[in-house]
Length: 395
Picture: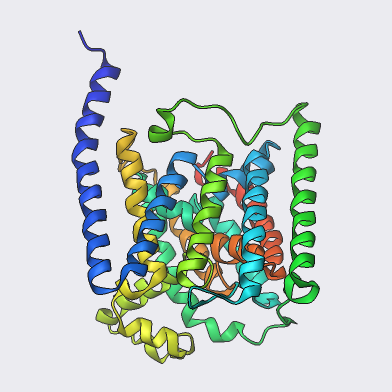
């Protein structure tokens, strides 16, 4: 006779099978459509997004939980894996960006000013990470992987992004300094060396802090079975290396590093039009490239296409692992935290030149010091957010 657990597993399997086929068919259809109407490069970027979604889901590679672990328990494997991820990216990014062009595509890094907007926006984003329950990439892969609460966070993320574009001009003349690139100031070799020294310093500090609290450190790598590569969970280091490859592939295909949240602003702007909100008159959208994006299909937008790939990749991964089981039982306080957190995430990303991917990962990988400033301010926001989580019934 089947036990209750076996019966539940059977229902989950029945539920996952059609979802898996729908996700696979959707991915194949979008890839074919993109190749036919938008070119092979756009289809390739969608495929890179698919890979990112699978890696994010199977490695559970969320920046939010990794930073919360450091703050709450002192465990730092996730943060240390992030340093390795960015070290790999810097080793590849820096000479490529210095070269300036590969295969006829001009390459540029994500280098932005160091100003009050970065500090305030990143702090808001960090606070939103803990209340909303995810970062930019984390919100995408967990929502698509079956976490219904994260759909609420994602919706609020989009709204906050639109509000951020509305207020964008107010943050353009705040106090600060011009962009600083380590590679630009110290050359390719100097930029790589200084970046590696910074990564090493963070890695060592985090490891020593964890060892002081627990007597030993958790490793970023652990052996897993061959089946686990299909069903997860992956070691953190596997996820870190996979995401480094995603960012490198994005640079080579798109000419600039990986980003996530600009697409949320675009989606929200397009949805605002039927409501009678003409965002085209806002300063943010009057820049030529963004004006063109407003008028074009979302499938012409690189970031949107990659985000669609991330979501479908995570859905495929969740269904293959028989873990796709959405539940609508969400406590009211948790819903409130998701809304507040999502709004902070969206607004903060727009004024801080990006999110944990565009500003932190891609900024630091481009040897831009604004990425390190973003990291410091966002981590401070995470500290406050971690302390506030119990107020919303979050563990």
